[in-house]
Amino acid sequence: MHMSASAPEPSRQAFTYFGFRCFWVATLTTSFAVQIMAVSVAWQVYDLTSSAALLGLVGLTLFTPALLLVLVTGLVADRFNRRGIMAVCLGFEFAAAIALLIFVDLQAHEIWPIFVVLAVLGTARAFMGPASQSLAPNLVPPQALANAITVNASAWQFASILGPVAGGLLYGISPVVAFGVAAALVCVSMVSVLLIPKPGKRDSHQATSMETMLAGFRYILSNKVVLGAISLDLFAVLMGGAVALLPIYAKDILHAGPTELGFLRAAPGIGGIVMAIALSRFPIRDHAGRLLFFFVGLFGFFTIIFGFSTSIWVAVPALALVGASDMVSVTIRETIMQLWTPDSVRGRVTAVNSVFIGASNELGEFRAGMVAAWLGAVPAVVIGGVGAMAVAAIWSRAFPGLRNQRSLDRRMVSEPEAAPAA
Image (cartoon, rainbow, N blue to C red; front, side, top):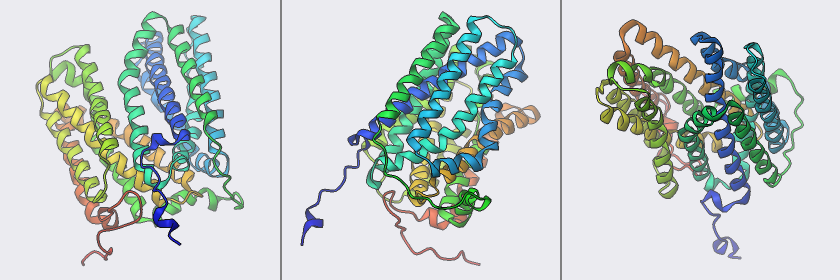
């Protein structure tokens, strides 16, 4: 029998698979809707209140449900049909967009209804995140997963570049138009999700208990490769995040205006999407672990370059290289995490990872703001970049299994993992 020798190898290109193409369209349209609503809600809240504190509460309101429900959202993604969960969550997002549309159309001046809608929206996204991220490995074979994660991330990056611009332009025409377009995009996303072929039924006979709810945490703590990948992202972004300080750089350091601030905000996304296109054409084949730590180090290095920049011509390319370096590390981390995580607990592990990512972004901006208030913006960014490089070096020594990971398609290390030398 020579069937195995003649059997064609599954395609490594994620777009080969119809289910993934539908999933990608859903990611793109949902991300655009999220960006449009984020810009529109922020402007609306500030127009009504002129309060920076309430503006800060917008992000916190959206993030809090994911933190409070982390044990539940992952379990739901592992117990129920992930495609169905996404469709239901998108239904709630559509309802939220319509509610915001009605609110602005009535020209109401009370602020609390907006935060009620945001809490519902945050809850829907808390359930959708683990379900959608856990569904991707069910739509493509392992050989195509790295490409799937890269291509899917490019959809998000594309939306993060053009979405805020579109949101601002649409809101300038009319808030009703902005929320109406967001609602229409969510409808397109919902149809795309429903077109995804139903994945095979997963058998799960575990009784719901605290033990099963904590399975995601337990698996992460017991698997050094997954623990290293998730914690690396948490602490590198916690140290290296500089987005919150971009307005200070634009106005006080670069002596620029809002147009230049727009370029600064778009630069990491532009670098990320260019790198995503490069990775889709030239995927990582070997030494994935070492490349991961190298690019996390570059993320910190280019953050330092941006920190010292005094010209828009240096700052924008530096931020683009920050985004490009982050895209490489995201692709490697997410692929390794997905392939090393059993499908039976993937939703719970993804839920924990999503909370870690959200926490690193929120706390990273808080760290940057506090250090900037104490020492100034430039030291805050430079210290953060040095910290991200230090995290890469320390984690490389602390997690040799992750460092020695070779292939993104299967579990293969360059050498047997040995206990660290005393």
